[in-house]
Structure formats: structure tokens, C-alpha cells
Length: 389
Ligand SMILES: *Cc1c(COP(=O)(O)O)cnc(C)c1O
Image (tube, rainbow, N blue to C red; front, side):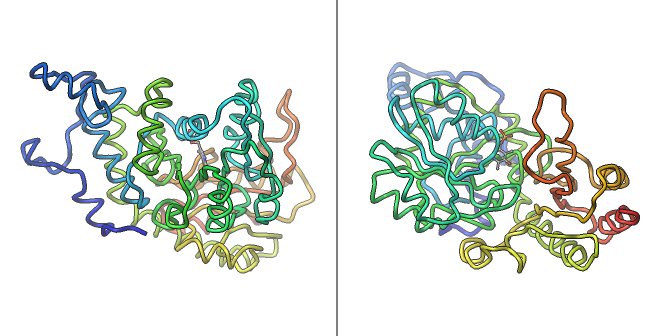
């Protein structure tokens, strides 16, 4: 678990203030390259680019502060950051497979993770099996001689299916398989998968970690050895790195991470408590809701859930459902989540798109994200919109 106090991580860790005029906020080290004062330093720097400042694709001082804080938040030895969550996910998977290998993946990960396995890696001879990861037996049954990676997303971000992290880590270790988890939903405040033995923890830092809906960023936390391996191969060759300016924005975002996720969590619970009593609500999906099929496991692995949940409304008219969605004004209709602003993503918006099949999810399904606004003000909006559904 976390060795350092959260306050220490967010206020002190990595901040060498005497190196930059005792400024409270770290400078944006907007430089692509760094000077070698002499040849001895030149040679030392090139012997280890991860530990020295040579070139910003590899190592930048502002980015380094962010990496230290993220590793400490997840309780891992080191961390890397990427220009998107998708970049971090791709680096974690690609860095641990070769042609002829096989990946076992829980059945409904983030859409571009599915695309990575189905579209990109199959072109390079890496096969995969998607499994219902709610039962460890399914994962066990899917493991082959050539399985090298077990990819988890617990909870995932539509129906919040969970996997038993300790059981997955034990199973994988016994077979020499690397475990990767997308921990974006819980954030490091509510779940630390490394404590259960998971090897690599990835995040879309675009969501809670940055938290202000103004940066796209990916995070990868792991052992020193794994971080070095992925730094020297995927990070340096694919080059999807985060710039120093964006890194400074994410450091800014982290300062308030515990406050923001706690607020989202409490407000989401307050709104769910009202929704569950409403006659037009058929089902609520939220890992800590009493109707959640994996409630005990969710409570065992997480300290909280945060602001993301889904609802199935009662409606038998497509047009009335569309009108309901349009009556909601205070929630912004948008993808993503984890920022200051409350959002809704209605499945009905994925229906009737030219050239695309309708999704397998009912059009009465809406995913909500509760941001930092007053929960009563948000509930008023849902309540008025529900009139006439
Ligand atoms: C958004 C998201 C991603 C992708 O992250 P980007 O920063 O958009 O590349 C990956 N996993 C989950 C669970 C996400 O919500």
C-alpha cells in the first residue's frame, strides 16, 4: 500500500524548490534538449537516459516531478507518462508481447483497448481471447501456452464489471504472465492494484488525475525494471510522450485529486439515493450500490467509487427518451468524465448513426458523471427532465 502520506506526495514529493528559486509551483521546463557541461557528463548521460536530462522525449524535469508523484500515489517504484491513456495502454501491452503470443483480456475494456487487440496487434501475429472476467475460472480456462499478458479493467466504465485482482495476480504469476490493469475508474485514491500484486497499472490521466478537462494524458505505474524496459523500447521508439506544459497542468490537477474524487463520490451517492426511488428508473449500475452483483468484491478492492454511474430508465418511446435527454440542461452531453463538470452520455446517441450498427446496449441506458457542482442543483435538473418521460 501507499508508503508516503497522501499530503506529502501531493505537496512535497519531487519538488526540488531550491533548484528553481524556491518557487512554490514548479517551472514548466520548456526545453527540448539539455546541455552537457563536459564530456564526462556527456558519456554518463548517454549511459542512462532515464536518469539524466538529455532530450525531452526521454526525460524532462517537469515531467519527472509528475512521474514521481504518480508512482507514489499507486505505490509502485516508478511511473511513465504518455500523451494519452491509449498511448500508455498500447506501450504496456506491446512491450510485453511478440509475434506468436496471446493476450487474455476481460470482455469489455475501453473501446480503443479493444481496437488495439483486435485491429492492431493481430496484424503483428498477437492473438487474444476476451473473457467474462467476473469469474476467475473463465480467465483460467482462457490461458494458453503462449499467453503473455492478462489485461484487466476493474471496474470498467459502462457497467463497472470487476475482476478479483488478488486472484488474477496469483493465477498470472503462476503462469509467468504479466498483469496489466486500467485503473482509471477508481483512481489511485480509491484503488491501488499493485497492492494486490498487479504488475502494471495504467490510467487515462485525462479523467480524474488531471481533472480539469483540459489535458489528454496517459499514466503507467510499475516496478523500476518494467518502467526501464518500457522506457527504452515503447516510450522512446513510439515517442508518445507528454510535453512539459501539459505535465505542469496535471501536477496542478493532482493537488486537489483527493478532494475532487471524494466530492464526486459523495454527490453521486446523494443523486443515486434520489434516482433509486424514482418510478421511471429501472436499474442503477454503480459498484457500491446494493443491487450491484459484485458488491462484496468491489468493497473488498476499493475504498470508494467516485462519480461515474449508469441508469436504465423506463420508457417505451424512442422519441420520448430523446426529448428527456434534451430536457437535461445542467449536465453537459459529452464523452469522457473525471473533470469538474457533470456529464451525461446517453446510449441513444449511438443509435441511427449512418454506417454504424446500433449498440447492443438499450437506448434507455444513460451514463452519468457527477462533477463538482452542487448535487441538489444537479438533481433538480434530472427531476424536471424526468417529468413526462
Ligand atoms: C478515456 C479512457 C481511456 C483512454 O484514455 P485517453 O486519455 O483518452 O487516451 C482508457 N481507459 C479508460 C477506462 C478511459 O475512460
